[in-house]
Amino acid sequence: MKLRLAPQTGAAFPVAAHQILRITDPFGEQVSDVVAFSAADRREWLSSGRTLDYNSTLALTTGHVLYSNRSTPMFMIGEDTVGRHDFLLAPCSPEMFAILYQHAGHHPSCFENLASNLAQYDISPDRIPTAFNAFMNVQMNPAGALRVEPPLSRPGDHIDLQAEMDLIVGITACSAELSNNGSFKPIDVEIIDA
Image (cartoon, rainbow, N blue to C red):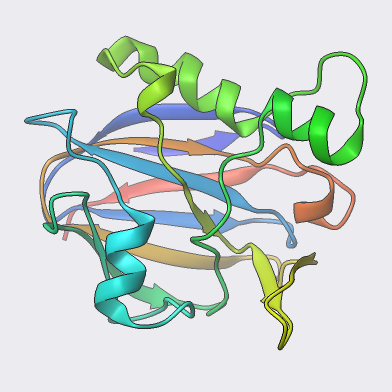
């Protein structure tokens, strides 16, 4: 399967154990939010807390395992041509645009795109966890303050996530201006049989 996500959109689909989910930034500086759920039990989902705890690093890249809320491996990071991703910040949402940016009116968001696409798999909005934000460049200063900087991804950069179990995956081409250096571009997605 190959898919190009238009700017500020999302998709959801199954990924079988051992298949590789390749996420490519075709034009550079575009973030992609990724969430995953066990195909066997949607109450098991990709967990930021477990993943950061067990890997003891914020700099997740090749060789690191992404864990579920039940401490089960969900993905193994394979080839990673960028090496800078985020697993701290939640998917952008209408509330985030209102609270952080005082944005009036509707603004497309990753949360809405994930929720609308995951609904077909009986995954409700309240069960959407913190996303693995591929290519997102979040920096922390010595006092612990976070700042979002432009992604380091260049045209054609990619990250491979090998599924360690049968999964339902939600993915976006992120809708937050700050995350994408002020512009919105597509994201390419491919499922590769290992």
